[in-house]
Length: 174
Image (tube, rainbow, N blue to C red; front, side, top):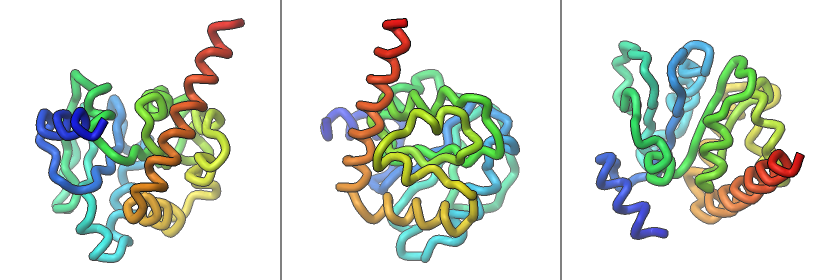
């Protein structure tokens, strides 16, 4: 609910902007942090100003890029997902990427690459946000579309939530 999301945002000290986050255990190089930074930089200023860009994970990277906040390791990751608006994993390669299904299960739109194994779980309109082939322009465009449209974020989030629930039910029945 909107009230719960607002409470989670207060808990994590998130601003009243659209929050876009790359969430991972670490290894930012493999998981495409550089791609995330390049896509943010390529957004038009007025769109970039509408959003808050975050990175969660144990690695620390020195960057002077003021649009990106490093939140470090996170204990309460499920509630963090419930506080953000858009999840990204622009990985160069990720054998599976459990963070994708975690984000989907929390009803988030997901932007990822075709080299992330969990991208196969995305269905219907959610597949639109699998970047294949990956380009900075395609990533930036996907970010722009989701930042500008709450309705699109909510629609894709619902599709993703249903898709991951269905996938989990299939796994349990085997």
